Picture 1 (cartoon, rainbow, N blue to C red):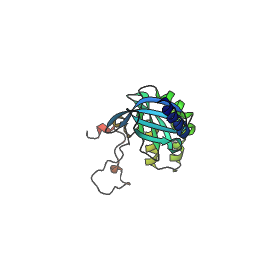
Picture 2: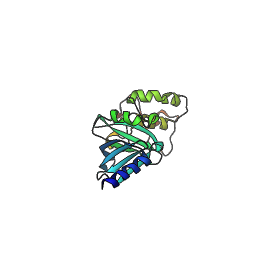
Picture 3: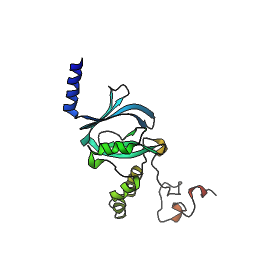
Picture 4: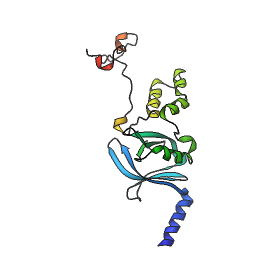
Length: 193
């Protein structure tokens, strides 16, 4: 009935705030893509199955670590949500995700990427931390991959790492031996010539 529907809406608003965004989406994982519905409330983000009832993911705003801009098929149509509660969630909307991120940033202001990849990375000043030894090579490369749009959820955009070690035979590596490392004067494909 209309009265019970209004009571249910009132209860939702009381617990989670008003619904701000309600959009169809696709959740991308290495094993495939699942259709769903993305909902942003004043206090939480919820991703529902296409039935609109069953919840796949629920994150309160204080559980979100960061939301990054992502591309799908070279178009900025996706976002990726990072939290300490769940593995990263890659969400493709099929439409420009910059406008969606802008709306999300009104409710989660300091945790949303609002610029392009290069500007956002520069703003974080991670290169300075790496040069000063505050973060490791691995940490720097991981952050560079993540902030440049690479993700573990989409196999076509998987993180990349440089090939440095050439000696694949020995159990221990002699870092003082130049033959341990690949010849950087040649491109990777020319090493078997």
